[in-house]
Image (cartoon, helix red, strand yellow):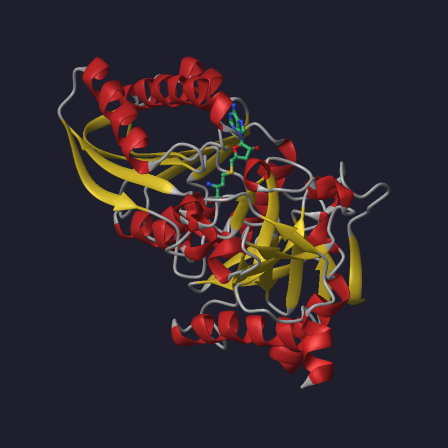
Length: 401
Ligand code: SAH
């Protein structure tokens, strides 16, 4: 017992200012720098600390990050962040994916295993692609735990995993000098995954994020269900998620647009993988607005899934104006009686703001517009109820007369 107490107290302590404990008491996993009593920069970035209130009561254990969010919480129990901690935490995440049918599914072998705060691990993403676990660290605190994280993945997934790839260069370039994306274990060559029996080649080495947008799985399924005999335009198409679903569900024609040539090349490969004989699809590497200007065609279904227009609150106003302009232009391209699938993945734009901006685009368009679905991220991208900021993906399906 004595030994246990000694272990528990070995992390350095940082105190909150008086009255700043409410947020941690409500299990919100962030501590803002202004709430701290001591200078958090006395600790190296990434180091683990115990957070106490101003009366020395324990509140949480987390890691230091230099920025406005100064501590990100890993545990609300006074415990050691060791191999057992990571295995226990990953087990919870694994159990959820098992309960929703994603582990050992016959039709889908790619899913998100760890979704940051949603799985109780701020700063960590782990995506599973047919045997390869792709890790993305968003903070140095998580990066320093990489060995234990790798161990937890191998312990939990066993023979289901044969390679682990660390894709953290883009997210950590400022914090960890000389970091490179690299295979940590096994042979992580790009491979083909199955999502609802549809094949996609995923490229985590050069692709965006961890290689694929797993968060649109359910929304792609919905689009597929409306696609039969429809003419579909998928803008911001990336590697063609929505496009392939449309085609495989009987769309009469699919056009895809993305500004990235690399993405369009992979999109074409994905079309060929699933429908090698089909000649009713086209893809262009082009800016969406330029495409809209150059083509007069109208579509039965239009998808607008742009990258996050706002990365922080300061950029929110411009982002909202960007969504308005994009959706005004988009609505013009939809036939009478057609559908618009429109999305925002900007975390700082909430669903109310998104709805309002789409409404103002609809008003300007002078069309009759009905909301028929409100969409979000799928169950393997859970939202910690104490961290509502985690609800980042918002979508509306509009029926446009
Ligand atoms: N819907 C996709 C994911 C889209 S991610 C899927 O389900 O996989 C956003 C994409 O928008 C990226 O591929 C990026 O290259 C592209 N993009 C960014 N700006 C663009 C622009 N102005 N015009 C067209 N594509 C753009």
